[in-house]
Length: 374
Ligand SMILES: [Zn+2]
Image (cartoon, rainbow, N blue to C red; front, side, top):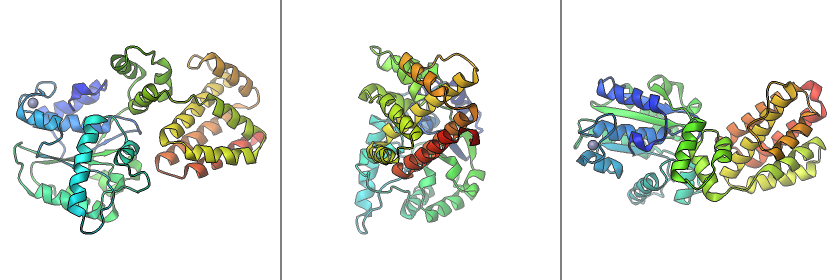
C-alpha cells in the first residue's frame, strides 16, 4: 500500500509524510477514526514510505524495500492483529497460518474492517483477540535490530481487542520503546482503549472520506455505475460503499416502513419477529439498515423543523418522510436519531443484534405513543 493507493485524505498524507521527512516521528502513534475510515491502509502506506529508499512525496514502489512492503513481507514491518486462540501445542503452526492469511487479506481486501477479517478467516463463531502470547512475540520481534531498514515498525490493528495481560505488556514497551522502533496502533474504537495507552500515543485522526472523494474513487473502479445512491448510503465508508456496489444490497426501504409502522402500532409480536430477522442478517446489512433509518429520521427532522429542502433522498422516501413527519414533533425525531446512533455504536461493539433491535423498537414505540415526553 502506498499513499497514492488510498483515495483522498491529502491533508493527512501530507502531515504524515512531512513528519517522516523532517524526522519528527513520534515513537508511538494512534491512527484512529470512525468505523470505515482508512486507518489501516494509512498505517500500511506510512510504513512503506518510511522504509522506501527512493521516496519523494510518495514511496517509489520499485526499490527493494518497496517491493517487500507492497507484498507485506518486509522483515522490519511487524503486525499484531486479532486472531483465534490456538490449542496448546499448535501455537507455532497456527501463528504461521494466521500470518499468511493476514498477508492475503491485506493484498485482496485492503479497505476491509475487522468483521471482514473474521469472515475471511471463517471464524464467525469465535471471538478473536490479541493474546498474551502475541504480545510476547511483539517483544521478541522488537528486541532484534532492524534487518534491512534503519527502522522497525510495529502495526497493531484493533488494540482494543488485546487480552489485558497483552495490553499490560504493550504498556511497558511503550514506556521504554526499543531504539529505532515506531508503533502504530490502528483503532476504530479508540474510546475502548486504556487511558494509559491513549496517553502514551500521539493521536492521528483519520477522517472518513468526503462524498466527492468517495464518488471519484467509485467511478474510477466502476465507471459503468452511477454511485450517487451508494455514496449517500455509505456516508464516507469506502468499505461499505464497495460492498454495496458489488453485492447490490437489498433495499432496506420496505423493512424500514414495516418496522416504523409496527412501532407506531405497538405491534410487539411483529417487532419480536423482525428482531429475529434482523439478528439473522449479516453485520453489513444490519449497519446498512440502521444508517438508512438514520437518513430517513434526519430528513424527517429537517422536514418537520422547516430547516431546509429535502435533497438527499429519492421520491419514494420523500413521500414516506412527508407522511411520517406529520405525526411527531421535533424533539421526538431528535431522540430517535440519538437512539439510532446509540444502536449503531452497540452493534459496532458486537452487542447482540436481537437485543439492540428490540430495545430500539420498544423505545421508539414509546416515543411515538408519548411524543410530548421525548
Ligand atoms: Zn521505494
